Length: 359
Picture 1 (cartoon, one colour):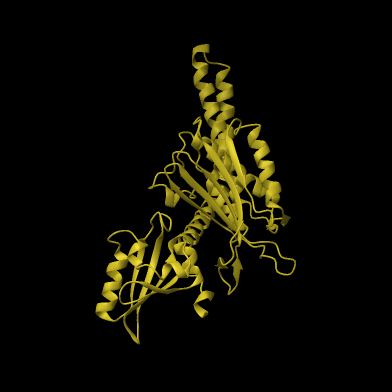
Picture 2: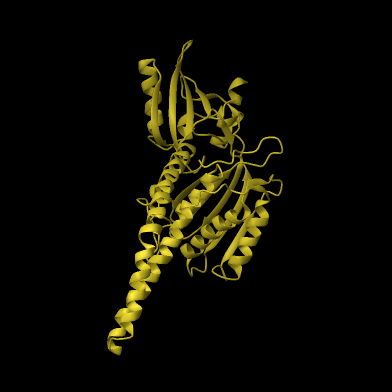
């Protein structure tokens, strides 16, 4: 069946509303085989009163195709949430029959967010270079002046000079962290076993910030190596797992899940060329903490965005920059007691390697 080659779920709904046919992607999406789908109307697989049912009626009335965007058709049966774009079209020689094609929003939004994050990272790159040059030098003078003043003021006023020096040091550290964004040197990459990286990060967590935290591993041992810089990957997962540990806090039921999987079929266009890079390697860090506020979620990888009281908001921006420089995509989905950071990256190939360029 030609439709089985399509990556998007396609369903044929008969005039009486019963599902008549489905491609392989639809079987996976609906979590049911074709033989099961054929025994039930489409209304049994979507929420009561779903806009999808109204859309099908409109297509029958108009005998013309209709598109609907961002429709949540998630149910416990097929998984929730399931936000999709829907293309509904009539069948020319079958009055009342309707063909449905779903396109999940998650991947499109991942790519959109990643491109936004890369643009934000470029903004920080220029800002970091400017700050390093224009701010660090005068800060050094301010700190030196405060040290001289400290020697000549009464002891009760030295707390103020100490405050000036401490705050100056804090600003210098912030600028130093931002200078990482202005590093445009080529990335030194090699085939990396992601499980070696994750095991190393887990050991670091177990002896430090993740002590007494429950960390569960679900790995696909057959994964090919990722073409990456090992040290930078360690930095990425240290940041994500540290954030997860902070999210669950001291909750005795707190749990962090680290998983790896192979997800074929995901391809990303390389800007400025006709090339498409396959991103089959999926790495996830999940926690059951309080979650990310809905208003922050779309901006989570932008600089200076943070949910922490004393956070700088640069950690996830740097993570997004590193993954973007490797030609990958990072996304976050969050609801109460389930926050998932999902990374998609290209695999190493002996014959075809990802372009070593800044995205």
